[in-house]
Image 1 (cartoon, chains in turn orange, green):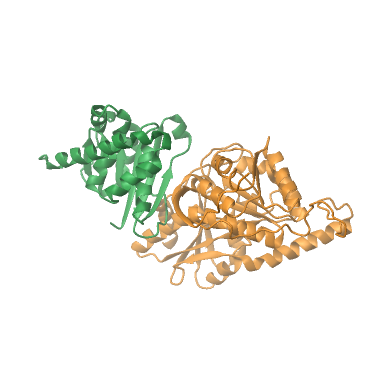
Image 2: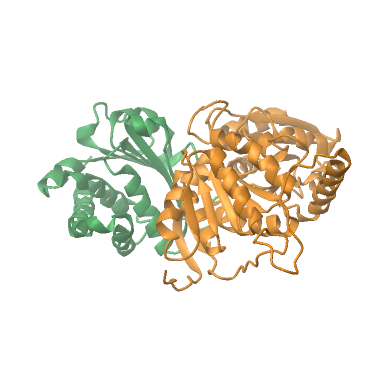
Length: 357
Length: 186
């Protein structure tokens, strides 16, 4: 097939799901495997429509279980590969993700979260925080987890996710929510062809004479070997700590800090603006990487600020990591909405005011 | 203009989401910051649809707000939900034939628009949304009118591009009727 010219830098108005799909193409995606589910079906739809004349394979599998195992295979062969789903679909993929983590393969996983548990609702949620950052499947493993809060970050973190996945040979997770997937914002798309990908030397590409055999497996039946694999993984997760990212807004003079990730962080920024209009000095800390978690910035901020409010679209998940980070130095409270409900700035403000009494 | 926070609400099929998209595309053309947040949930599958559009000169924090500078209302359930959500001093535009109970507030500017009647006069009732949008832009010119016309090409799928002239007429009609309306003694 004749290849189209590479696309240059562009500024566009795009839906989050479509922007992330376009970013994946521009990041040199070799293969996508997935199964449709609201609120992220536009990802595969967009890829299907836009990838053929450029490069790469898009395949709708028969299920999420099949999709993730195709990702496993493609990643083993050295492809730049991704899948995307939403909460119930992501649950189906967990076994495969554990295998990929054990086999130490890079790939990008996208979860555009919806309200659960169960089939739940198609409205936005952050109920899969634990699943994303605490493993999700069986065994001791971690995903490099990025939490976008704008459509621009839906683009940027596709690149960042592949970069980190390939640097550390781990699966990376882009943890978004339904609202981010469906909303439109201005995005700057980077030029195509700026993010080259070479097939790594560990990939199973067919043994040539003179090269040692490459084996991709997650089965290490001898406990001594399996323990060593675990030690290697843990050393890798430790090394990843230098990649931690967070954003601090107006925290210098703050008497109270809001902590939130993703879209909720932006709602908190609005709540903080409203609070400052009323004379309450509020700052916001937004974890950008959820694993590695920005423990240090939270801990040092708690040397000075004694009140924290964590806001999430769940029953209280990241708040546990905030409490561990702050380690008793400050009062950490929680405000959450569940089941697809989004907190509004005014209700966060009401909670803030009650904490300042 | 600093920031304009707008809710557009009505039944699915009235073009509520595309009105919002036109505003967002125009803002992009005008080099402003913008966000467009649709309802995509059960209410959309059950009939009503809405979107929140923010147009601003500076970075937008929350793309979701609960108080609006402007509400553009195209059905009764949305009136009941969003009349109270307009900020004091804000504006409410409503399509007169779709509303049973007109708004009662006295601390906001209320504009009754006969958008459907005007659209029917153009023999295309589907462009009632453009009459509403034209009226809104006459009162609050937050984006340039040329940008709105350019945005039509973005929002209408290519197979509907032959409908661009009728949409333009509807936008102009909206501007015209609100100008007359504003001249009327209250």
